[in-house]
Length: 614
Image (cartoon, rainbow, N blue to C red; front, side, top):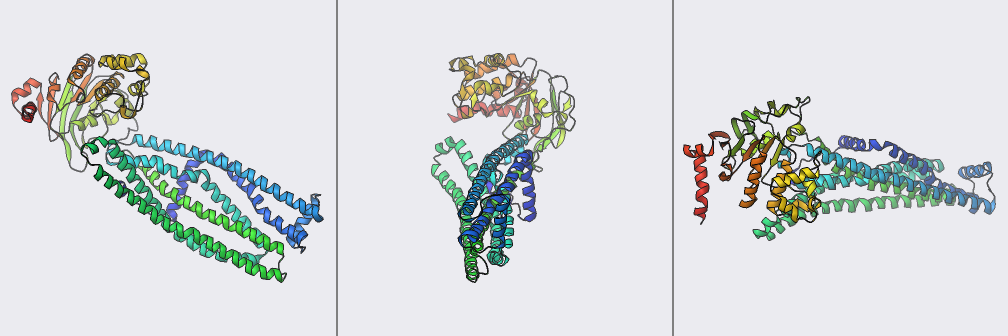
């Protein structure tokens, strides 16, 4: 499934409210911080509003005397506070009050910004942690159908898209709304006729914002989808760069990437058109509003219907009124980007794993070292059955081998034992308890798995073997390495257990990484060993060393060995031959060869292949 094929969620006011409510849930743990920022907004807003009012009073009282009601109120306030109110001293007093209001407002803004920027980072940390924790609970089937690049986009780009909203957007919107309400009250209190002139362009701004709103979300969603497609492409092709280079597919891969990148570019360019039209049009409407104010205010000022101070205050207030509207437009832009990201994050968190722990797990049974499949049928999709009525049991300490052609269902058996999937029919019992009744952690703790694909992580050798499991100390790790014949590897590493491995275990050979995976499996003292072609990546000498170690370590443990190379199952107690999901043969290696059935055919084909190839 390509990243571009993701479900498109419809937009609308109801969706906006739902997403905003969901986003606010992540802010709730920091409500004290947000409340403090809101209080700072409420305290700072009057300081931003008082400046033009003081300017009007200074002009009407001292520069061009025409005392208005507002100017007289300022004069009475100065007298009540026993501040100088006459002549130059009164003008200086108003100037000083103006400067103090500016300084206090700036200090409150600094405190508010610090609180919200910190809060934004805390919210993003919680959201990213919750997303990663949730992703780890999802079943294996979800990961097989979901590109890794899309998951990475969710946890990085989409979360980062919420940064500005959590850091400042929500409080900025509140600040702008408070300022707009305060300025509107001041404008109508000073001169209602000029206020109506100034607000004449507001209906056009509302219509413009609605038009922008209907288009911005779709653009943001498409851009995020294209980013996910790019991340998926990069992840797949960089991880498989050796295949690309060996097949000389660099030109074809580059052409495919250019197409993917061009789709992202085109989506951004479509968004640029809307922004390029929206913001200049907002500025044009603001200019028209100011021009209308100058025309009407100038005429009324000459006729002394209004004072010069009131006109100057109106010009300042209108600039301050339309600036929050412009900020609201920008914050609305942030809000749309956040909603587009929130849709995707909410959808990810809404994905529920198909395999869930039981509400009341059974008590952990004693270690019997026995598992059983009873009439198990399983399909990954629909009625395409991979396993059909499969029944067999492994006795304590038995070494059981599963063989068959590719697609016969061997690895599926292993996935069902570990309860990565649940069978549609039948049941799987581990130590006498149905796997669906086990606590998942306890179930998987009893099993050790070594896969054909080796997963090592960036970190120390110690961390790669212990994997954070409690009770595993250095002595236990060294013992496990010795048992799998990795002592020479440990001796050559300069830092021994502290040696740092690179991404995917770079710094070790393929065979050494396989030895690490064996030590990782053995160090936890498992009850069951599940091996999926586990020695395919090591040379014959290393395989012999490992086989010797396994012979000792399998004592008291039950093993299920999935093998394509039939030579590796010679020493197994029983060999189960699968074909089309059914158990068609069962017995020891020698017995099955004597039967001259499917196993004998597979064995002969493997023996003949080298000679035919030569």
